[in-house]
Length: 446
Image 1 (cartoon, rainbow, N blue to C red):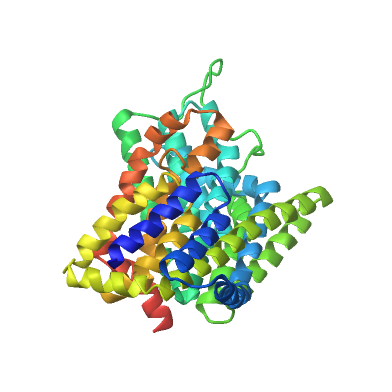
Image 2: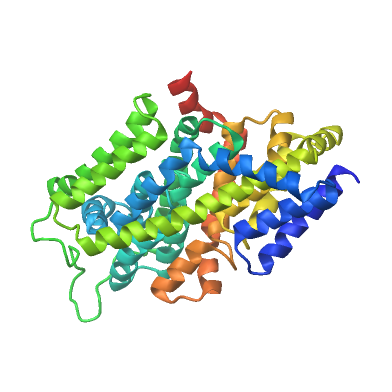
């Protein structure tokens, strides 16, 4: 059987077991076992011996230690008033832009992305604050919700990023270089989103409008003290800026590994919640339990991905498929275009971590054979996963906003569609100008 047919059979088997509704990691393990037994003609006792060593190696990866720390960091921000302070601080700055407070969605998500590394936590935290407040000021609903969905996905791209850690572990790519590579593309997409919102508001004449019964637009948010100015804004934003600087600065200067930097960030946020007297035993306990559930889910999927990657390796599928692609004389551009369509399809039915662990074992050998930089490909893959976060029917950001606001998923998908196009257009820019992605890692790590 040719490698393409074998790969398609395994991919179809993965989709079938996932469609059955069973847990993702169980489905991946079943497909790996089926592949080795049926396609590789391997006895079950040998398969179990292989699995034992793979599980111990994957579970003992030091890089994965950063994941629960970043998740816990995001949970604390979600459950305390740190998020409110950030948006209170952003208010005086974003009011100066066309579109006003709608930009608080974009810049707020960007700041949160640089703290917790989770798209779901970013979207939920920002959405709980901005949807209600922007609704009171009669901003256009489609721009408010669409910008939140698109910007919330930046939690995967702007470092620190949990998805980047998973990619780095599976592809054996330095995570600190991935983090550095995500900075400029993340800021670029943030600027594109902000420019789009500003242009839309200038063209349509959208601006903050008074709520019914008011004679003039409100000048401050309900929780903003009288006389709140730029210095007060900086005072609210300063602790978060310091934390971001400590976490990312310690990584880029080589002082700390990503896992150690995650510990630094976690201690800083924990200290901030104590100093501001927002940390209670209930918040501490619930944030730990949420972190435990999320981290276990990610770890089990990563371990299952290592098993299926090993199974594919024993069947020689990645190497054979890579040779097949090279012999077919497909250019890197054609490969990126085809995989983009494929990832958009997968994004409709799978979450980001699942997409990476399912496809990377097959695609990474092809990437290497085509001469595509693995750092660049990692950023590209993360952006395509972001697109999947806002495409129906399983767009997790859409579901989060639906849970907060009650807007139908189909309508929410239409609101997010322009931001999908903007991210895809950004990928094209990064393909033709790869230095946007590679400049920082090349400068920082020579």
